[in-house]
Image 1 (cartoon, rainbow, N blue to C red):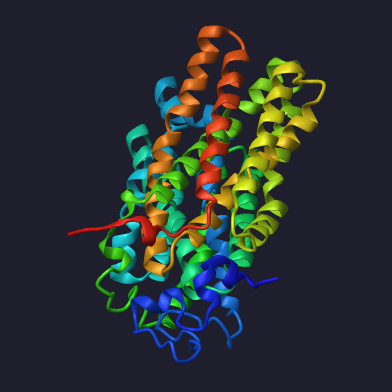
Image 2 (cartoon, rainbow, N blue to C red):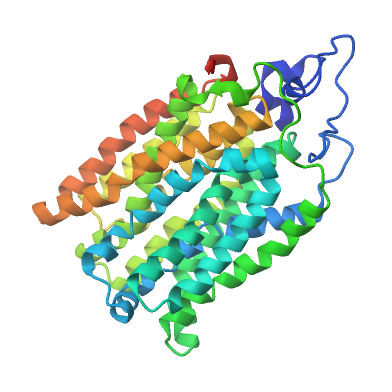
Length: 444
């Protein structure tokens, strides 16, 4: 079986000659096989072990991409009471992360080209730590929202650039390291959701302490990235680009980029709806509140082992469309169960929806596989996540509106299931063995 680099880079990488990344920095040398990549800021594809500090930094950064969000939900009532926050503002907070990811994520390519992806991720960890530390002590809703936005800005740029770091520095390990990154992200998500209330109780019941404690993860993530950046003084993004380098391409003219963006947006919609509303569906069906919380934790925890395995499998396939369809079918089965027998088969439905939520690591893996160069991945990742998160914003609000006006979960669940059908369709399109650079028009 081909290794991950061949599965990732496609047929062009299988023939002798330079890798796709080298086309942006050096002329082709068809007379012999390409030498290992030695561009500053990269680890050669062969001949060098993966530095431990990079692995530690990658895992710690991924752990920080959700706790600032998922730690807030369990303490929302206490936060509202402490800040005098209105119910409408509290409701809007469920859509603020997606909006911030879309807005701030668009800045990531420019920042990466100027400073290098490692330096920007390091700054992102600092922003997360600062925002999480400051927001409980601002004394009012405007300050709380501003500090939250600072943390979300750090998360947004890191969301975009961590897949780029993997593609740039470890082009032959995209599958395994994307799996490790996705697993750590899922672990951070579930830990913050499950432990925030117990940790708050252990710290004397202060909601400020329960929120600020998650800044420790972000603080721990800074030193490894500082070490990486200091050790890569030449890392300033790609070298002199060729005339048709990805920076000159209009990513939005690529059908594959749009398929990826819509797939990403629909899977994010499903994930935010699940995180926000699945416990209430179970509670309304007669499941005790404590059990409903455990069921959500099971759904989130499913992503920990599967997020490690799935990218490795996807990276070895030429077409990831069947995986997108398989995960979508799990979602449809889970929604059908929630509609027909939510309490009787609660554990099965939580399991199936946990499988379906693994569309997120699949989307990340496909981003790395649908572009030839590191700069192409930066631009494709920014486009996919920015457009995708914009698509996901209305979903949780629409579910809330349908639930409020219909008085039950029939229509909201029908909406969730209905969205799974186009998700599978665009997943098939995004999974085709195509490259964004081959489709996008050149900016004149």
